[in-house]
Structure formats: structure tokens, C-alpha cells
Image (cartoon, one colour):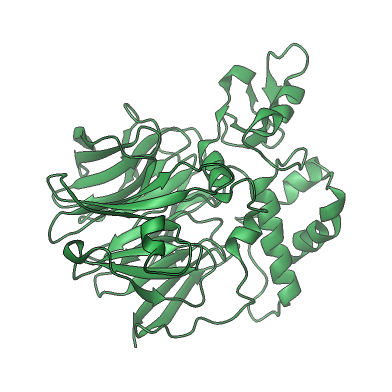
Length: 447
């Protein structure tokens, strides 16, 4: 039910105030496009969108998508594309904003003693910066021949979601640009049917009711104890607590149903990424940098950590994770290292509740039964214990079968998705897909 890739980092979509402070020096290839994009979209994540009922041309929609790409993959000071090496490497400032290494050096000056964030004016020293790991992971996913985020996402041309062969139909669509900004994780509350979504807006967590209305927003972007710098994934425990992995300060944070912070665990993690709630107030989570799987047990009502135990090691960049509520089995999506010009591949690994290996298949193995490259980004168990994954290459949701028959291949949704990065099931067995390509949550039910 967790995400495997990042769709946004830091303050990637500055609003009107920023545009007044910094006059963009757009590259020649993007001036006209950027101008159209800035006029076609809201001023910022917290600003209201266009009035209801107002028309929006396909050209304006595509311009907004391209502006989102520029915001994500280009430094917002020099507007040059980020890269994995040298002066183009993205760096986090302590305030949570992201700049390239070259701009950090230029802002620090010749003495390199301190610099002022161009967005929020907070002072810091060059030594206080850190590598923006989520964005580096995204650059790794796109690869040297990726051609930018738009080529990785593809474009559906605005086509509506058709009913897939599995008999699932689109019942509800939530969010959209201006409501959600580059969402990264989605989870369903077992009792209430509410959906919690992690994204890159000013308030990192949005909670939607079963009918689609946004009921609550919390998790301010900032440095306070209960703030969230960069939410990578989210889950909801059986008693309604929302638990978030924060890639900005490498922590796990828990909030009650009202959005009040109750627990923050920062010690021992390198880069906590995906997580899923298990029974008895436990959460299973991955540490992508450490290559490990953890079991975190806590009394969330009292805000007390009971234990945080590594239960599996020697995994390769594990990100998405899901727990089978009936058997306790755990499925993990590992991101294998790229070789040569390749963009890398993924491996889906199933472990028993005792952490014994049950099954394993990588992108090459799946290609033997499906004539297309598969790159898994999210994973979940359905009610019958079958493994479900999202694939960003075919823009589809695929059932890989139960652990004992793993892997089989059955496409569940093959139309209407742009870049699926999150996956979960509700208590009434509706399938929820987080589509970062159009910043939305899509709920599917049997037709």
C-alpha cells in the first residue's frame, strides 16, 4: 500500500510571492511553455483553483503538467535540470527547500560561511545542507535516457478511465492539481473508511471521507517536532492513528485522528520509506538506505514506543511494503541497481510472518509472462491474500496471485492511469490507486 517512487521534493511549486521575489531565467526551450503553465494553474498548493464550472483547455492542462515537471526536475533558482553528479546534484536546506549544489555555493559566496534561503530567507551554513535523497532516487528511476518526467509518465490525452477486464469500474476520483501536490502515499482507515493521503503541499496529510470530501489537513511543512519535512508514505492503524515516514529528517511520526502529533521516532533509521499497519498496534516499515525491514510497536494512545526491531536485512533498496492481515505475510518491492544505461528494475519479494522467503520475482521474470517491461512502485494484499502491484511502465494495476501460486499475471486496471505510485484496499474491498501523474486518488469498485 506504499509508494515506491517520489513525485515531488521540497518547495517545488512556489506561488505568487516567490515569483515576485525571483524573476525566472527560463531556458530558451521552456519560456513559452512556462509562461502558459504559470497562467494556467493556481498560484500555489494552498491557493484555490479555478472556479467550479470554468472550462480548461487540453493545452492548458498539458502546460500545467509540464510546469510541474519543471518544478520537480529543475533547480528553482537557476532553472537548470538536476543531475546525479557535480554542481547539478540536489541538496536539502535545513528549512526543507531544495537547490542544486552550484546555487548553494553561489549563494554562500566566496567565504562560504552562511547562505540565505531564497524562498523563506532562513539563514544556514553550507555544512548544514544534505543530499536530497528522494529526488536522487527519482533521477535514478528516470535514468540517463529517461528524457524527463513527462516521458516517464506518458500522457493519456485526457481519456476517461474505461472499465477494465476485471470488472472494476472507477467510482470516485479525489484531489487533482491544487488540492494534492505530487502525492506519494495513500492508506485506508480500517474502521471509518477514510483515506489518508501524503503529498507535498503546505499541510502534508489530507484525510478524505468515504464520499470524497476533505475532512482534515495536518502535518505542517517545517522543522518543529511534529512537522513533516517530506512525507514518503502513510498508513493508518486499527485505532485510527496516522503514521508517516518523513524522508526529510529520516523519522517515523504518528498523529491521532485530530492531526495532533503523538510520537516521533528518529533514532536508528537511514531512510525510512514504505510502511503498512499490522495487528496489535504494530507497523512494518522499510529502510531504503539500510536495505532493511523493521517492526515498530507502540502504544499510540499514550505516545510510547515499545520497540523498534530490525526483522530482515540484506534487501536491495526496499521501498513499498504491505502486510497480509489474515496470514501476517509481508511483501516488499526492492529497487535493483541499474547496469549501464538501463533505468534499473524492481523485484517483488514475499516473506512469511516469520520472515522466511516464500516467493520472489523481478522485472525480467515478469517479462516472461507479460510482453512489456514492468516497474513496480506500490504493492498491497487484497482481501483474499493476493499480491497486487502498480506498474508505471504500462500504467496499470496487476494481480500477481496468492503467495502459493506466485507469480501469476492478471491485469486489474489497464486504462485511465498516468503514473500510479500508491495502492490500498478499503474495508468494503474497493481498490484505491494513488495516481501521481494527475495528482489524484482513484477509487474502483466491482461493476
